[in-house]
Structure formats: C-alpha cells, structure tokens
Length: 271
Image (cartoon, rainbow, N blue to C red):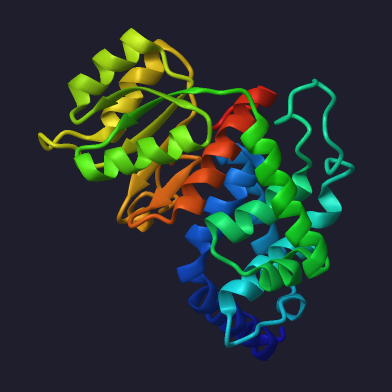
C-alpha cells in the first residue's frame, strides 16, 4: 500500500480546492449562463473538476491569475464536448443564429470581466476571432425580437437605470415593482417575457419569494440582481441560472439579458 502516494494526492487535492474554491461560484455562474440550465451547467463543472482532481497535472496554474487558469481548464474540458454545437440552429430568428462561440466570447468578456486577450487564452482562439465574435453577438442580440420586461427593484435610481438599459436594447419595460406583492400583481397583469429581480425588496420581502410565486403562474426567464452573489451560489439549494452582481456593469446586464432571451428563444429550460 503506497501511503506516501496517497498522502501526496490528498495534499494536492486540498491545495487545489483551497486555490480554486473562491473562484468556483463564478465558473458555475458562467457555465450555467452558457448552457442555459443550472443542473447541466453544474454537471459540466463537476465533471471538469473531477478530471482535474484525478490528474492535477492537467491544470496549468498561472499564480498571477488563478481564475483565468480555472476557466481555461474548464474550456479544455468543454471544447471537445461541443459536438458541432458551434453551428447555429436554423429556426430563422436572429437570436437562434447566434453560435455558441459567440456566447462564450460575450459571456467571458461582458459577464465575467475578462479582457479580449484573456478570453482568447481561455477559449483557445485568437484575440481577433474573439473580438469579432463579441461584436457579432452584440449585433445579433440587438436585432432579436423585442421583449416585455418586468423590473422588481426597490431602489428607484437603480430601477430607472435598468429600465434605460432595457429600452436602449430595444425592449419594453411593461412594469416595475418595489415589493413582493406588487411584483406578483404586476406580473399577473402584464405577463412579461423577462423579469429582472432584486433579492432584497422595500418592505423587507424577498425577490426570490416573488419570483417563485410568479413562476407558479407561468414560465418566464428571470435574472436576479444582488450585492452578495456568493450567498446564492453555495451549491446547497436550487439556484438561479442568471445572476448579476451589484454594483453592476451595464455590459453585464446587456449580455445576461441577451443570453436569457436566447435560451428562451431556443426553448431550453433554465433549471
């Protein structure tokens, strides 16, 4: 029995968990948004991590950017699994024509905040190709059919800012709400195509509770907004597929709205 080898492997596993742990919630967020499904996204991440723990040498860690190393490792695992998924579907809408490569490039740069150069390293394509994919993705998202959006947010300035971004993308704000009860009433009245929801609402009620009630009545993609994303990305309960951190970058909101509507257009479940 090679106890020394087992001890070394256990030590390596603990070291990897310690290094990668703080960045895993954000990898899960990215992969969930990429595939549009919480369970499938988490399964891909889990499988990639299991492969690394089984063979730590496959993870080349740049100690100046452990997060970049983690995302690069995931793509080394993910890229061979795409099986031609990079080709657009042929349903005829602009959003259906967006290839997965464009979603990868846009989400890495706009949602996760990587530079074009870093995204190119992660994906394994040239910076020029990634820059073009981001530009093409933005163009196609902007050309997608307009959607009706409900904003659940208790801070008027933030609600107004979100509304301006939504309308600048060509969508319509069909209602705003500051409390759970108001959100549920409004959703039932206007039947939105998309919901942007804060977690903490004006009267101490929960945006999560509001959304759960809304989803009983009809299916609609939801993007949650919170200052503490790590509290929702624990892996211990059902978690949102789409999550934006406050204070948010407008580009993150635009990219996430586009991905949520892309998933809806393709008829893929969120979770």
